[in-house]
Image 1: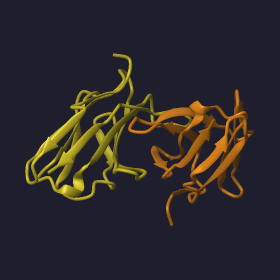
Image 2: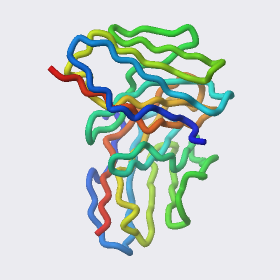
Image 3: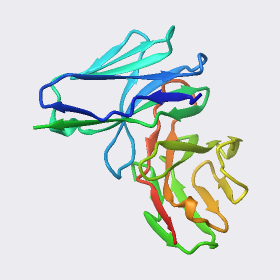
Image 4: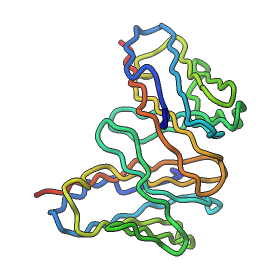
Length: 108
Length: 115
Protein backbone atom coordinates (compact mmCIF):
# COMPACT_ATOMS: atom_id res chain seq x y z
CA UNK A 1 0.00 0.00 0.00
CA UNK A 2 1.30 3.46 -0.88
CA UNK A 3 2.11 5.80 1.99
CA UNK A 4 -0.07 8.54 0.55
CA UNK A 5 -2.87 8.03 -1.96
CA UNK A 6 -4.83 10.63 -3.85
CA UNK A 7 -7.57 10.61 -6.44
CA UNK A 8 -5.65 11.68 -9.55
CA UNK A 9 -8.67 13.41 -11.07
CA UNK A 10 -8.79 15.35 -13.25
CA UNK A 11 -11.44 17.54 -11.74
CA UNK A 12 -12.78 19.86 -14.42
CA UNK A 13 -14.88 22.62 -12.91
CA UNK A 14 -16.29 25.96 -14.11
CA UNK A 15 -15.12 29.22 -12.63
CA UNK A 16 -16.90 29.97 -9.39
CA UNK A 17 -17.57 26.33 -8.54
CA UNK A 18 -16.52 24.52 -5.40
CA UNK A 19 -14.24 21.53 -5.73
CA UNK A 20 -13.10 19.17 -2.99
CA UNK A 21 -10.86 16.13 -2.89
CA UNK A 22 -9.23 13.85 -0.37
CA UNK A 23 -6.02 12.11 0.37
CA UNK A 24 -5.45 9.06 2.59
CA UNK A 25 -2.27 8.11 4.41
CA UNK A 26 -1.19 4.75 5.72
CA UNK A 27 0.99 5.54 8.75
CA UNK A 28 -1.01 6.38 11.85
CA UNK A 29 2.17 7.83 13.41
CA UNK A 30 2.34 10.63 10.86
CA UNK A 31 2.51 13.98 12.57
CA UNK A 32 2.27 16.80 10.06
CA UNK A 33 0.24 17.34 6.96
CA UNK A 34 0.43 19.80 4.11
CA UNK A 35 -1.09 20.63 0.76
CA UNK A 36 1.35 21.68 -1.92
CA UNK A 37 0.53 23.02 -5.35
CA UNK A 38 2.51 22.14 -8.45
CA UNK A 39 2.07 23.94 -11.75
CA UNK A 40 3.09 22.28 -14.99
CA UNK A 41 6.87 21.85 -15.19
CA UNK A 42 7.39 23.83 -11.99
CA UNK A 43 8.50 22.90 -8.49
CA UNK A 44 5.94 22.20 -5.75
CA UNK A 45 5.07 25.11 -3.52
CA UNK A 46 3.37 25.08 -0.15
CA UNK A 47 -0.30 25.94 -0.33
CA UNK A 48 -1.14 25.41 3.31
CA UNK A 49 -0.40 23.35 6.36
CA UNK A 50 -3.22 21.21 7.74
CA UNK A 51 -3.98 21.49 11.42
CA UNK A 52 -5.93 19.08 13.59
CA UNK A 53 -8.84 21.46 14.03
CA UNK A 54 -9.01 22.26 10.34
CA UNK A 55 -8.01 25.57 8.88
CA UNK A 56 -8.91 28.08 6.20
CA UNK A 57 -6.79 30.31 4.04
CA UNK A 58 -9.01 32.51 1.95
CA UNK A 59 -10.91 30.30 -0.46
CA UNK A 60 -9.08 27.18 0.65
CA UNK A 61 -10.16 24.95 3.53
CA UNK A 62 -8.19 21.97 4.77
CA UNK A 63 -9.44 19.27 7.11
CA UNK A 64 -7.68 16.43 8.90
CA UNK A 65 -9.35 13.26 10.13
CA UNK A 66 -6.82 11.30 12.13
CA UNK A 67 -9.22 8.48 12.99
CA UNK A 68 -9.84 7.71 9.33
CA UNK A 69 -6.40 8.88 8.23
CA UNK A 70 -7.46 11.27 5.55
CA UNK A 71 -6.94 14.90 4.66
CA UNK A 72 -9.18 17.00 2.49
CA UNK A 73 -8.89 20.21 0.54
CA UNK A 74 -11.82 22.33 -0.53
CA UNK A 75 -11.55 25.22 -2.94
CA UNK A 76 -14.45 27.69 -3.04
CA UNK A 77 -15.21 30.16 -5.82
CA UNK A 78 -12.66 28.54 -8.14
CA UNK A 79 -10.50 30.82 -10.27
CA UNK A 80 -8.78 30.00 -13.54
CA UNK A 81 -5.51 30.45 -11.68
CA UNK A 82 -6.39 27.56 -9.37
CA UNK A 83 -5.71 25.13 -12.24
CA UNK A 84 -2.81 23.02 -11.01
CA UNK A 85 -1.90 19.69 -9.46
CA UNK A 86 -2.45 19.55 -5.72
CA UNK A 87 -0.08 17.36 -3.77
CA UNK A 88 -0.94 15.88 -0.41
CA UNK A 89 2.16 15.69 1.80
CA UNK A 90 2.52 13.74 5.02
CA UNK A 91 5.45 14.06 7.38
CA UNK A 92 6.36 11.06 9.52
CA UNK A 93 9.30 11.89 11.78
CA UNK A 94 11.56 13.63 9.29
CA UNK A 95 10.33 12.05 6.09
CA UNK A 96 8.02 13.88 3.70
CA UNK A 97 5.85 11.53 1.66
CA UNK A 98 4.02 12.88 -1.35
CA UNK A 99 0.86 11.75 -3.01
CA UNK A 100 0.91 11.54 -6.79
CA UNK A 101 -1.31 14.61 -6.97
CA UNK A 102 -4.86 15.60 -7.90
CA UNK A 103 -5.22 17.60 -11.10
CA UNK A 104 -7.72 20.44 -11.08
CA UNK A 105 -8.67 22.34 -14.21
CA UNK A 106 -10.88 25.40 -13.88
CA UNK A 107 -12.56 26.47 -17.11
CA UNK A 108 -14.02 29.82 -18.06
CA UNK B 1 19.74 34.04 -2.65
CA UNK B 2 16.62 33.60 -0.62
CA UNK B 3 15.48 30.29 -2.07
CA UNK B 4 16.76 26.80 -2.78
CA UNK B 5 19.05 26.86 -5.79
CA UNK B 6 19.77 23.89 -8.02
CA UNK B 7 22.23 23.55 -10.85
CA UNK B 8 22.32 22.85 -13.64
CA UNK B 9 18.71 23.55 -14.53
CA UNK B 10 18.96 21.23 -17.49
CA UNK B 11 21.40 18.46 -18.24
CA UNK B 12 21.58 16.23 -21.30
CA UNK B 13 24.02 13.37 -21.00
CA UNK B 14 24.92 10.26 -22.90
CA UNK B 15 24.04 6.88 -21.52
CA UNK B 16 26.87 5.54 -19.41
CA UNK B 17 28.26 8.93 -18.37
CA UNK B 18 28.34 10.18 -14.78
CA UNK B 19 26.46 13.32 -13.72
CA UNK B 20 26.55 15.54 -10.65
CA UNK B 21 23.56 17.58 -9.56
CA UNK B 22 23.98 20.36 -7.06
CA UNK B 23 21.65 21.80 -4.45
CA UNK B 24 22.19 24.95 -2.39
CA UNK B 25 19.61 24.99 0.37
CA UNK B 26 18.26 28.02 2.17
CA UNK B 27 20.86 29.24 4.63
CA UNK B 28 20.33 27.76 8.07
CA UNK B 29 18.11 24.92 6.91
CA UNK B 30 19.37 21.76 8.53
CA UNK B 31 17.13 19.29 6.71
CA UNK B 32 17.67 18.61 3.02
CA UNK B 33 15.77 16.23 0.76
CA UNK B 34 16.24 14.89 -2.75
CA UNK B 35 13.29 13.71 -4.81
CA UNK B 36 12.89 12.45 -8.33
CA UNK B 37 9.89 13.13 -10.55
CA UNK B 38 9.49 11.28 -13.80
CA UNK B 39 7.31 12.84 -16.48
CA UNK B 40 3.66 12.74 -15.44
CA UNK B 41 4.47 10.95 -12.20
CA UNK B 42 4.51 11.84 -8.52
CA UNK B 43 7.51 12.70 -6.39
CA UNK B 44 9.74 9.79 -5.44
CA UNK B 45 11.82 10.15 -2.25
CA UNK B 46 15.53 9.51 -2.75
CA UNK B 47 17.47 10.61 0.33
CA UNK B 48 17.27 12.83 3.37
CA UNK B 49 20.05 14.74 5.17
CA UNK B 50 19.99 16.06 8.69
CA UNK B 51 23.04 18.28 8.84
CA UNK B 52 25.74 16.40 6.94
CA UNK B 53 24.42 12.97 7.86
CA UNK B 54 22.03 10.90 5.78
CA UNK B 55 19.93 8.85 8.18
CA UNK B 56 17.74 7.59 5.38
CA UNK B 57 19.11 6.56 2.01
CA UNK B 58 16.36 4.04 1.41
CA UNK B 59 15.00 5.79 -1.64
CA UNK B 60 18.17 5.65 -3.70
CA UNK B 61 17.19 3.32 -6.57
CA UNK B 62 20.54 1.61 -7.04
CA UNK B 63 24.20 1.77 -6.06
CA UNK B 64 24.76 4.03 -9.07
CA UNK B 65 23.18 6.80 -7.00
CA UNK B 66 24.99 8.55 -4.18
CA UNK B 67 24.72 11.87 -2.39
CA UNK B 68 26.71 13.90 0.03
CA UNK B 69 26.32 17.11 1.94
CA UNK B 70 29.07 19.29 3.32
CA UNK B 71 29.19 22.22 5.71
CA UNK B 72 25.54 21.59 6.50
CA UNK B 73 24.96 23.39 3.25
CA UNK B 74 25.56 22.27 -0.31
CA UNK B 75 24.51 18.81 -1.38
CA UNK B 76 25.54 16.89 -4.47
CA UNK B 77 23.62 14.00 -5.99
CA UNK B 78 25.80 11.84 -8.21
CA UNK B 79 24.51 9.33 -10.73
CA UNK B 80 27.11 7.01 -12.19
CA UNK B 81 26.81 5.18 -15.51
CA UNK B 82 23.52 6.91 -16.31
CA UNK B 83 20.71 4.93 -17.90
CA UNK B 84 17.73 6.16 -19.88
CA UNK B 85 15.40 5.36 -17.00
CA UNK B 86 17.29 7.96 -14.93
CA UNK B 87 15.73 10.69 -17.08
CA UNK B 88 13.59 12.79 -14.76
CA UNK B 89 13.45 16.06 -12.87
CA UNK B 90 15.53 15.89 -9.71
CA UNK B 91 14.14 18.16 -7.01
CA UNK B 92 15.89 19.30 -3.88
CA UNK B 93 14.07 20.71 -0.87
CA UNK B 94 15.21 22.11 2.45
CA UNK B 95 13.52 22.90 5.72
CA UNK B 96 14.53 24.69 8.86
CA UNK B 97 14.49 21.48 10.83
CA UNK B 98 13.07 18.04 10.50
CA UNK B 99 10.49 18.61 13.18
CA UNK B 100 6.80 18.91 13.02
CA UNK B 101 4.99 21.47 10.92
CA UNK B 102 8.12 22.81 9.30
CA UNK B 103 7.45 23.24 5.64
CA UNK B 104 9.92 22.31 2.95
CA UNK B 105 10.92 24.69 0.20
CA UNK B 106 11.82 23.32 -3.21
CA UNK B 107 14.34 24.35 -5.78
CA UNK B 108 13.34 24.56 -9.40
CA UNK B 109 14.87 21.20 -10.13
CA UNK B 110 17.39 19.77 -12.55
CA UNK B 111 15.87 18.24 -15.64
CA UNK B 112 18.07 15.29 -16.59
CA UNK B 113 17.80 13.70 -20.00
CA UNK B 114 19.84 10.61 -20.76
CA UNK B 115 20.17 9.91 -24.48
